[in-house]
Length: 242
Length: 378
Image (cartoon, rainbow over all chains, first blue to last red; front, side, top):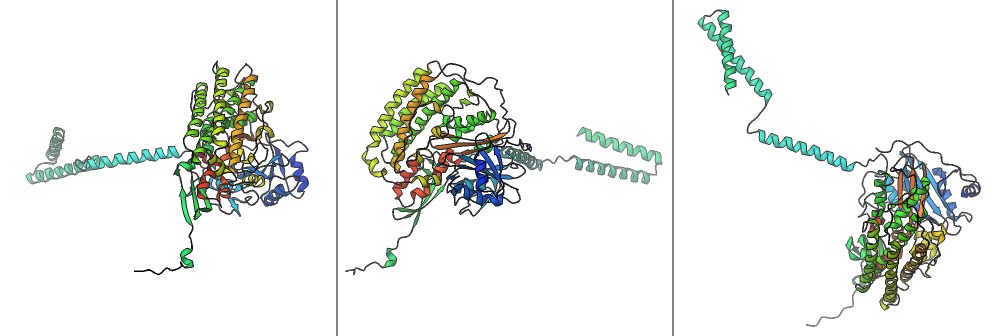
């Protein structure tokens, strides 16, 4: 995997007077972790507070975030995150709201009842990250009609499908070659082990035969051994001749 | 034999809703897009858009490339406004990496981006006239003008469609020597093309009858549904990211933001037509102001490393807000690259706009969204 577990980088605090302060004043009982990104101020909230925060962000007159520009899922490798980029046409300010949760419990309340545009964004996010948006009216897969069954944009899903396919293709090709060799081998079996066993059995049979013959003739043990050696030598020469 | 006439019973008069499947291989769907229309007679009572036929996972692929390689996927994300989306991406990278772009490169980028906006809108005009049943004249006129531009882009970038010309820090190479002169030539031809379009479409009987008052959208609804770009401005809301949150050097140019009044299909067309004229104005000013100098920021390494941070860079593409949500955790690859495309969000409001209208009008409404399926599916 290309991405190692990247250490969390602390982004700087936003300057005083930013939208983060407005949020803190409007919602004093909610805990916000504010940070300044390259353009927007990002506020991380707890999942329990999300519903309240989003409702207030849309409806409060000092916030008036009437437009959800973007909803993105992010896999931080120690948990999942959903980022909502909000913009207010009326007041002309923007903010990013973030919520984090573990892999084991990927549930977030939906915001599609507040901003209708969230509908498709949440469907896509559900499909790509496996995040369940509780209360969403229609959480069917969007881009892959039948659903994939795995979550492609998670970092645990490597971008190696092509290579795996090539690998399995190679394995299949190897197996096919072996099968073809087996099919061809039926006509002339070349099995070394079987051949060795056959040879050993043949030697044993010849040795037994020669010894029995020698005993019948009444030869001495020395002459018997000589006869066995000669018979085996003849067999070896016979094998070479073949 | 005489059959006695009988009044039909109530049961026989009942009509049933029929599902009509439009697409994915259908000229009116502008690519591989399918909509399942439930119709009651001639009226649409439900619409279920089905997308994803062109999904290639550009986001995942970009996360596995370095910052320079990922430019290629931007072109392929939006194959009708490539410079616009390249600009959005390189601006995001530059802002995160703190790269200062030389003046000349800024101007070259703006000129090409605005030319590309005109090319994209011309494509809309051509396809839209075909949707309306005016197939022929305007289609060919629009493509003639677009072809002039494609040739011009090819002279500069060496490619007809997939330019990959903008780079973090500037542009890939210097433009040809006769750039200014050629650009003026193209502009003259474009002005003629825009006037042709105006003359053929704006007061055309067919266009007026079919488009005026069709599927009006209020600004409140448009915002809630996530409409951006010309779709939003047609409702009367004067909002253009080039003005509202100026990026690049758009604050140096004088241009108007055209708006509609009712947000109907006709207004969407008028806004796009006027936007082309404004783009011509911007290019005109940019050509006059364009200085000489370097085209690439100094000290750029071959492999770009971006410090940790995140950015949601939004630009005004021809189809609305084009957002790049880029997270860097250091290193040479983007950690996460989310593409928020205008056409995706605009298309998600299709059901709201189509339901209650006639089937024949559904095709026009879909055409007026000006979708590019590669941008919708990414």
